[in-house]
Picture 1 (cartoon, rainbow, N blue to C red):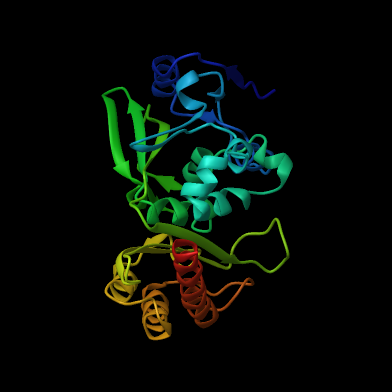
Picture 2 (cartoon, helix red, strand yellow):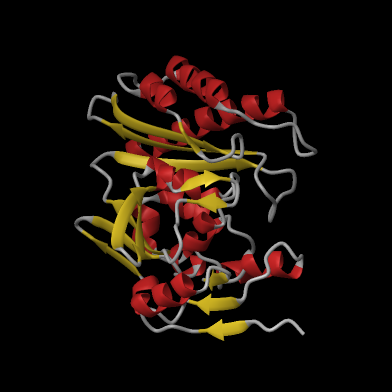
Length: 287
């Protein structure tokens, strides 16, 4: 008979000790990915380490510096958070797309990120908002930009004994907003064929002074696209600038052919979504 332990640490230090001592143990933040993988035989952990009882991993705090998000905070908490939706509407949109309402009651942004799916909805939105991952491990704490966290499908930078504790998002500059869009085959609860997030800062004259663009589901990891951002900065986010940004995203995409879409189709869609997300972000600033 297969014996699997269940552990429920009450501190980050205890969780780190448990997963450092047992390489086959797996962190259980919500289980919406892990338990499905376990049932399918893709993951066979020796222990489930439930981190939802650790105070540092649960909760949302917004102050003058920005957002501090506990990695195991249920997605439903974020979708209900009025101030978060006001400051980062694109990020809120991405969180709202995590599975169903029931899944959002357990699943978390931290878990969505640690699952390291190229099609994860929150990753692009976090990237364009300059989010950072706070990681605890046997050697102490370290911080890394979200765009560097996922290394390949199913693989992150987390080393033995390390745990994602929190996600930090700096407060947006004045006249800044964001947007996230994805294309899915069905109307809901599906995996993105392509996704794009855009953040823009616009001055009082309507000129874009800063931008970030990220695309997902079109490469082994979500991609920050500096050339697309460069196409937007200095423009009034007019049709010509949006077209250049779209072309840059399409050029940066490295998708595969599969039953969900061809390489050419996904490249095109990455550009289309970039253009539309940039236009939405602009409208949110000026309206």
